[in-house]
Image 1 (cartoon, rainbow, N blue to C red):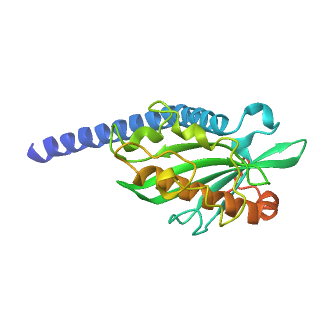
Image 2: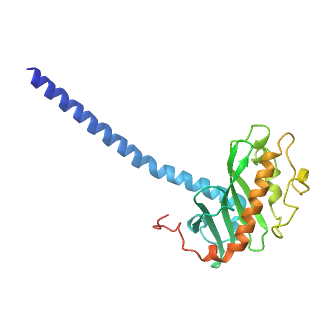
Image 3: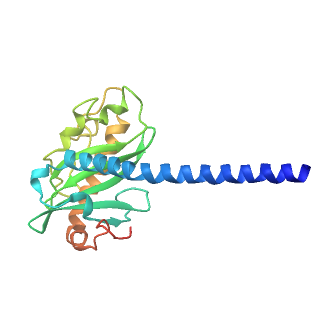
Length: 213
């Protein structure tokens, strides 16, 4: 009788486990597509913020390569999106990281033309102090827009610094470290893009449908 009851309970538990596992799998399959669509929309939104959609005619998020370079930051890999017009790469949209923010890493997305002119910049992730360092966000201030249409002339271009250091970019009241970190990293990213533009433009596409990253 006891053995029979144990077997019955075991069968119930097994069935429950199978049903639960199946339900979780179905939920994951059902939500995975929605999550992927949402992530795609967020990525497209960011790409459009740094580079006007009218500037290119390809699916920007589906045309990229991955690079590892100390000029871009400490991460093992960064994504570089290629904006094309009639097949020609007219701009690069590059990920980078400022490792010297006041509260740690600051992730950045920069759109750069071949001549070193910046189309736009956005901070995509940071842990900077609310009310001070978070002014890198466009909803907090217009500061991030000050990069648009600015050009890095060369590695010694002293204009690419905050005004406190003799440059042309404003610092934040009570927070100089954050803008200094962003300006320096964007400058390094632009220089890297210029030096490697042709190589990055011709690299194998890592973001095409079916491509392995």
